[in-house]
Image (tube, rainbow, N blue to C red; front, side):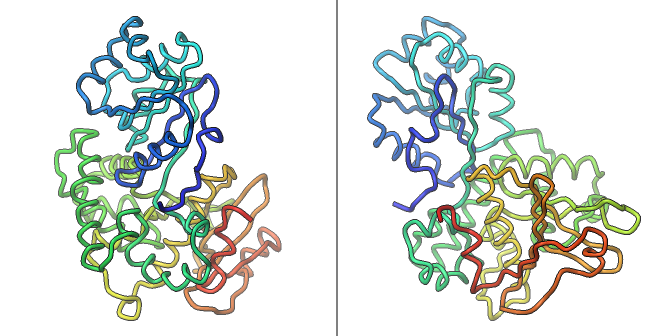
Length: 377
């Protein structure tokens, strides 16, 4: 089994609250859930929100029917719970009126499931997110040497569980193609009435080419021949379905520093490369710097989420061209990072230091990167 950060239900299952696990399709939610349940010692039942009878019971609001459903089980787990109408109300009835019952719900869309559990479970839930396998997790089962040897593979094919266990390059490409077409895009299209799926796919491809670069919503709208509101709506959906995330700019002076544009990064390099069908080796491509920056920022983002570090991520750039790849801020203190694929020299930009003072500055390359990604010291 591939190692995951969450390895015990006792560590993550709160008392008198519903545990909500978000994550994209095929990221390993069901596999992890089954594994944790098998080790828990609880009498449990695991059902799918796509099961008609389960959907009927949990959306009924009928206390007697719901109570009958839980009989004989100490823990109920509902996979793909976003498929159940009024799931929040059903879970609230159970957690409030069935003494000692433990509840878990998983969802592949934070938007769809949060809409349905929202107000009914206010103060009654704990939320965790599951991402593709991180380097910190893989370090729990592999040596640093092994991971560094496989680093080019991670940059090209990413780290979805099925991709990691695939035996050949051809198999990896086929899995990523299926993930993109049959799962991720299908999820987005099912959320809302998207009239032109082609625009969504074109937007994803544009963002794939613009990884690590500034993104202008107005420019995207012009290229896609749609209005800015449509682009913003699609970007929001892509974030809520765990395909990409946004990094805003760090600025205290909009006149001298770029503050109205953002950068978008993919949670998984393989998805990014699959969208534009670029699976060539690193020696044959001109986007290694982009792949490296996307890889490192997504890894640090995942680490922040798993360890509950409550850090804020930013980039910085001024109109003279000086820039910082990543700024991590917490409690008023900042750390700055530059990502170089190969070892090289650098320093904090003078214009930034003059304005914000001397700050921690780190260059992260393919030799020292793992020291920044450990989940356990």
